[in-house]
Image (cartoon, rainbow, N blue to C red; front, side, top):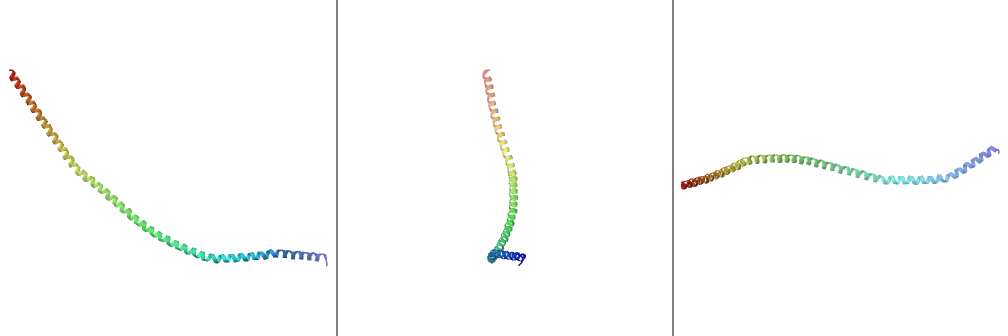
Length: 153
């Protein structure tokens, strides 16, 4: 055997040793990959029903949201009607207030005139009585003075 053949034999032996040394971790790695594959398959088997339940729940929530939207649309429609009624009630209230002001002014104006006339009549009557009393008092004083003058003559 020549030196080159021996070197090839040593190289082949070293490669065989390397393969044997690496075979153990590769076999262990194979077991790890198998366990991981089983775990992924098991996880896939468990998540499929879970995702089906989640899809059903989402469909139910969507149905409930559609019902809520329908209810809100109905409520908004009713609120619009209430708003219209409130505006009409406000207009009626304003009209009644205006009518009350007109009736009050119409009734109060003649009453004020009657009251003012009555006050004027009372004052005129009082002034006339006062003037008559003053005239009578003046006449009495004149008569006394004349009587005194006649008595003095």
